[in-house]
Image (cartoon, rainbow, N blue to C red; front, top):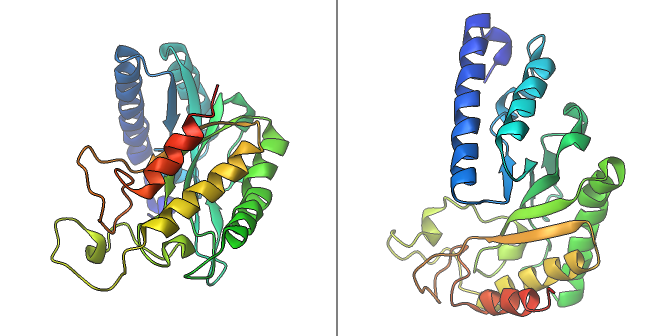
Length: 244
C-alpha cells in the first residue's frame, strides 16, 4: 500500500477501525481469561506514518492496556530461507517507538534453519543459534522485554527446514489432489523443533512457545505444517514435560 497517497480522512477511518479491531479481541480475551495477547495489526503503516501517528497509537495502546486484564505484547515476523540467506525481522524494531512499554514481544518464526535438505542435529543447532544471535538476542539485550514464540513453522517434508515451503502451496494442502512435489519427512520436522527448543532452553528471557499448527484431527502422514500425531508432537511433549 502506498501510504503517501492516503488522505487524512482515510487515516481517521483507519484509526477507528483499528481501535474497533483491537478492542474486540481484548474483550474476547478478557471474557475467556486469556493471559497473554499479542497484537500486530498496525504493521501496514510502519513504513510511512502520517504526522502524529506515534502519539495516536501511544494513546490507543494506553487505552488498550487499561482495558485488558492480562499482558500485552507486540508481534514480529522472522522469515527467510537458508539457501540465499534472506533472513529478516519485520517490522524493524528501530521503526517502533517505546518497545519497552510492552509486557512481551511475540516472534512468528518462519525462518529456515539449514541450507541442507538432509541436515544433522549439529547443523540445525548452528542454524538456530545464528538466528538467535543475529535477531532475537539483540532484541532482548536492547529492550529487556521477554519473548514468546507465538508461532514456529516447519513443514513435514524433506528439505522443510530450509525455509522454502510456502504455507499456501497446493502441493501440501489436505484438500488438494496428491502432488509429488515434496517427499514426506516426519523426522526432519521433529529435528527442527528439537533444535529450536534446545536454543530456547538456554535463554531465560523466552517465556512461551507455540507451534504452527496443531489440528484437532489426527493426520500422521500429511505434508503440511501440522504436528498432531507426528514425531514432532512427541518432541514438544517431552520438552513441555521438563517445564516446572
